[in-house]
Amino acid sequence: MKIQKLLFLLFCIITTSCGSGKNNKRLDANPEQARYPEKYRPQFHFSPETGWMNDPNGMVYYGGEYHLFYQYYPDSTVWGPMHWGHAISTDLVHWTHMPVALYPDSLGYIFSGSAVTDAKNSSGFGTGSNPPLVAIFTYHNSELEKGGSNTFQSQGIAWSIDKGRTWTKYSGNPVLPNPGKRDFRDPKVFWHKETGKWIMILAVHDRVNLFSSADLKSWSFESEFGADAGAHGGVWECPDLFPLKVFGSDDTKWVMLVSINPGGPNGGSATQYFTGEFDGSHFTADEKAVKWIDWGTDNYAGVTWSDIPEADGRRLFLGWMSNWNYATVVPTSLWRSAMTIPRELILSGENGKYFLISRPVSELSVLKKEVKSIVPRVKDNMSDAGPLIEDPGLNQCEIEFEYRIPDGYHDSLGIILENNIGEQLVFGFSVEAKLIFIDRTNSGNTNFSKRFVGVATAPYESGKRLKMHLFIDASSAELFIDEGKLVMTSLFFAGEKYSKLRFFSKNPGSFPEIVNYYTLESIWADKKSGLKF
Image 1 (cartoon, rainbow, N blue to C red):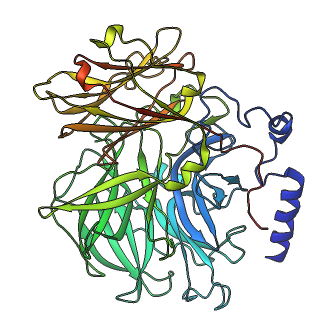
Image 2 (spheres, rainbow, N blue to C red; image 1 turned 135 degrees about the vertical axis):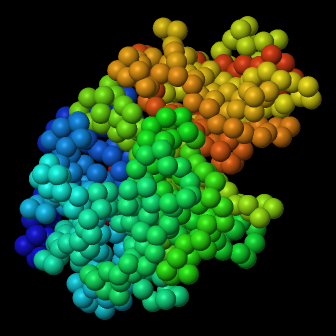
């Protein structure tokens, strides 16, 4: 381990960024330019330096650092033999690229999973004074899969005793062999203090299985959930299970997240959730109806960080900002895919029913570079209102506004982003149909996939006012409605940067009174990361 650590320190000195190093000459040549200047490259969302990325993995907080691992193929921008890529942040906003954490081996590719702090050293991989980080992941054996076997997925573990810088795979892998089930993957593990056990929730075809362990090495089956609950349009993946206090009360419920592909509300990939009770063995849902954590087309495989300190108390979520309908063909170069902005999950209860609220983390406020409060120009209809904002900064911004909905108004209202070549991205609310929508039909480059074109919708009951909070970053939009009661995430690939914003409504009395508009800094500026090696 000492040799590994010395090699890692030497690597950091040579590359100066604790990343792959191969692009550093280009990136550091002019520090006043964007650090990653490629077309469509997000500037305040996490993306890999190069190569393919999908699911977030192993998200854990340890020693003042947020770890983000992710499904990664460094040799191509198309999915391939999976590794665990790695990045670290001290503030959830600025990220330092790290070397690949886990490589494929004779047992298979390294598929999705989780990581925990083994505070009591139950695994024996560390010591009482230096507890290990333990990663739990799925091995995917492509040779067994090609041979027709159903046992090609199993669960393995690895550990780190140097704050996640280097990892050692357990010689006894797999710790959970496959019992003969074709889809058997994506373990999320947590410590259940009431029973003094580690709990693993695992995706198994179109449901989840729960297992328990005393030491993270030997696992016993506990129960199954989901055969008759939720959406079943595709395979279940990337589950999560955690307790969450009901906002404004002393009650606590358990929340289960489960991604599904296909079967999302607007086609392809999406993430559903359930609320209920968990006794250390069985999860019992409050209701079996389908609920979506994000109604947009491009938020998938999201899970939450482990081991956030009690003093913080938040449940922090991150998703993969893409959709398997077209993820491998989106028109980016050097890299593919980004993550959503980190979000805080809040549980709201009303009349015995419970709903997740998603809000951007407060840490993002450090990126606000320029703040403008703008009074909209009120015209009779959307066609002659004219642009409210004309600014190239619209490509990298945050916008907050609130519509009034007059009595008797039944049409649509919202905003349009557009550029100088006539492309438009539309965000709106149909009052009569009670639908929030994002229309990317004429948003720019859509010819790479027929499944990309169209209008995404979400049912919504609005009151007399409707708040919209929007984050735009190069090729992505995240729309938060009424403080996060509904969220929609969408990719777009405009031929030119959007530089104009206009409001639309057929009733001048419904226009927002004030718009707060913020241009945002890049998270890739040349600043000290705060990491200690």
